[in-house]
Length: 209
Image 1: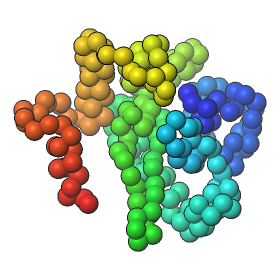
Image 2: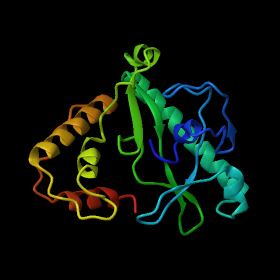
Image 3: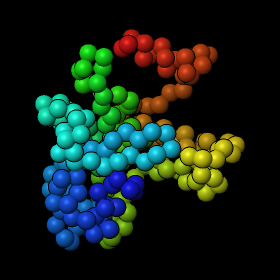
């Protein structure tokens, strides 16, 4: 949970969050009545994202009203599609992050990946009702395994990251392979290519740019 999350602010006593009013009595991990968009600005390196409302986005001139309407429509449509795919795999797409920007022609574009465990939280649908009723955290992909290991040894935003043991790397890979197979429904296969990973990523992206 980050400082920009709805639950962090709600737990601190706020009820007007991101331009929405939240009633008293909500519980952690409880499903909201409707899907909402919670925008933040993109922080510079070493800084934190800043929560903003739709009114602030338009008032600051970050987006025009039509642009904000388009971003909102696209975000909600993407989330609805991702939620349907997740449900078919026995998963709940809880929340996610989309990064939008403007290209040189002023058109709104979606950047970065979407719906991976890096930007999204997934819970296991089968056990969610039982664990929520018992006040327990939902079963999920533990994608923060590596992050916790690093954070216990340094400040990753300011300090050099120490060498990561092979067993930690292996466990992180296991979590991501499990997530890949559960989310996509496909079996994970290790590439036999001798081309370095970064070159393969650039080659795969080159067709779009």
